[in-house]
Length: 72
Image (cartoon, rainbow, N blue to C red; front, side, top):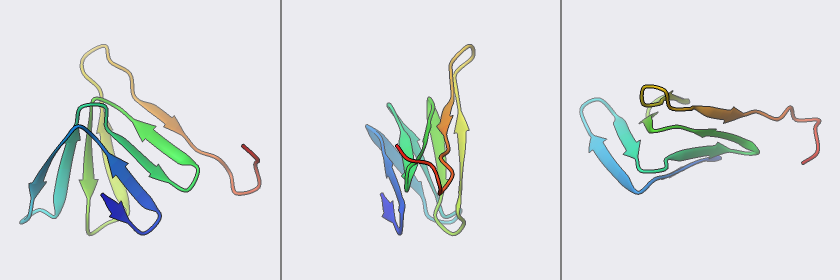
């Protein structure tokens, strides 16, 4: 999924048109610039600039945010 600077990838995506959401599973990731979020499931909101990341019980959620002044 490409929406401006926000790019999401996953093995599987389920689109909910009424809600304007896509639920990503199977190694989902959302990148926005140099920022990255990963989890077991990501709900990607098409009409908003947000995503909800969840992990399975005991699973990890990863988020990497870089300030605009930092270098990789």
